[in-house]
Every structure is written in structure tokens, then in C-alpha cells.
Figure 1: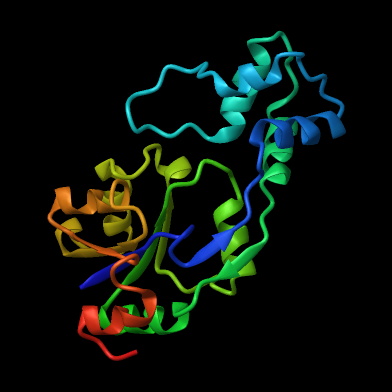
Figure 2 (figure 1 turned 135 degrees about the horizontal axis):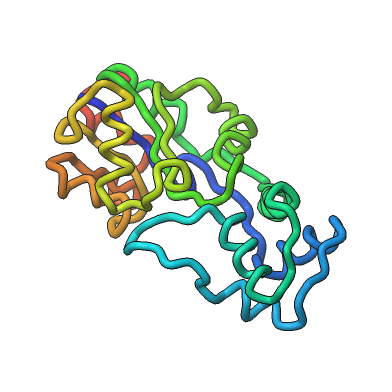
Length: 206
């Protein structure tokens, strides 16, 4: 059996800006970027033509929003501003250690996260003391699609040397994490099976 975990809401809770557009604007302003008067509208508008469930890294979206208003900072400046705007406070959820031990007793373990912000997943793993615990880490920004699209699950299974049909994915959102079932895999909802009970569900001792 191959086991994968969602990150945010499953293994950790992480702070997010109450107003993402304002948070990004503040970081851009600190880097000398002029902010359009209607930045909120620009930020909330899609400026790139993308397929359903495709993921656009947030810096690319922010840069496109700025360009739509005639502002053209470098991609590096926009990226650094977005990363800083989403710098999180992270808390591990109860039962993480036992859940990971149970998963490791079953076989390869991976992480599959919907996340459009560069550096956010590795930074979160470091702050939650989870760095190095996963044989593979797949983010939607890196693979180009968000769960429930099959690509994140297929990419993770390939990276772990497994078949997607053997994947048991543990997450908190049936609509996204439950997409593994379309590939023949198994979804475990932490709302029904908390991390502290995962060992019994997997049939493994932590």
C-alpha cells in the first residue's frame, strides 16, 4: 500500500491573510511597485486562459493582474512579494506522528497538496518539523493541476514507484482529496477518521 497525505487542514493548520489582495499589495508596495487604484478588482479577476482544474502559480497571476493595469515589475519582485505575503504561522495537528508511523509501516509515503504559492509547502514542512518525512512531495503549482484532477495523484504515484490504484490518500476535503477514487485509489477523510485513528484504518501499528 502507498499512502499520501494532504497538507493544509490535514497535517497542519496554517495562517492565511484575511485579505490576500491587500497582503500582496503591501508586500509589492514595500518593494517599490506602484499599486493600481483598483488593485482589488484586478487581483480577483482571472487574466490567464487556463483549462479547468489547472493551477497557475500565484506570482504569475499577480504579475498578470499588474500588467493588466500597465504595471510591469520583474517576475522576481512579484514572486518575493507573494511568498512574503503568505508567510504562515504553522501548527501541527494532533496525531500526526502516529499517523505517519502507521503510513510508513504500510509502504511508501507521499504528500500531495493544492498550493499555488511557491515555497509555502517546503516552508510549512520545516516549521511543522515534517521535512524529510515524505518520499515524494507534489504540489499543484509544480505539476500544473489541482486535485481532484488526476495529474497530482498520478504524479505522486509515479514518483513513489507505485500505481495510482494502490494509493490511499488522507485528506480533509472530499471534493478535492476524494479525486483519488476516480483512479481506483482510496480516500480517507480525516473528518471521519482522525489522524489518531489512522493506524486502525490502515491495518498497521504505529
